[in-house]
Amino acid sequence: EAQVTQNPRYLITVTGKKLTVTCSQNMNHEYMSWYRQDPGLGLRQIYYSMNVEVTDKGDVPEGYKVSRKEKRNFPLILESPSPNQTSLYFCASSLTRWNTEAFFGQGTRLTVV
Amino acid sequence: LAKTTQPISMDSYEGQEVNITCSHNNIATNDYITWYQQFPSQGPRFIIQGYKTKVTNEVASLFIPADRKSSTLSLPRVSLSDTAVYYCLGLPSSNTGKLIFGQGTTLQVKP
Image (cartoon, rainbow over all chains, first blue to last red; front, side, top):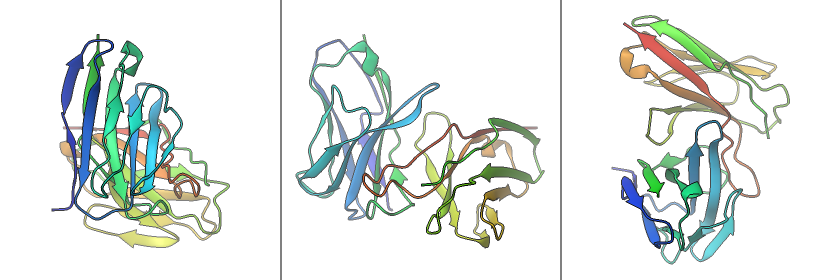
């Protein structure tokens, strides 16, 4: 089954404790991205990757890092989480950056206290 | 890149047909219109896309008139499980691939 898998689904952590949210897709897609969703602000792109070893900042990259060492994996790293990073996070993938059909993960609800 | 406008919310009852209209007055010649569905705390899911006239799949129909300045997503005989937010989108950003999600239309289906 074609899917994007994120882990964990829920995470509560403390300020400053490094964490990684994993994302994996099984569709051999070139393009992957991370979004955060907040009430009243909608979905905002954090980082994106057009292919292996090619990543770039989206609209709200501060406080986040990503890597794309393999085509299928695109982890999101919070080196020193802060409460303003409390949000619902989604990983997405599509065949290329021009494709309108994107596949989203189930989401990770992160709470930073 | 088309800027889209949709109603913020709609109510319906089970068994009814629901039509959600999206305005995109400045749609580009090469823009496709895509609709996504999002249930609470889940990722958006691609429903349907079209360029003009009518497209139908197992989930919905999409009507785009000849001038392409608007489009209508039609959900036949909705059920409670169709309660969700529906987003109308243009093409991804050509530079970044970002999908532009607006506020969407919150559809509430009542029994």
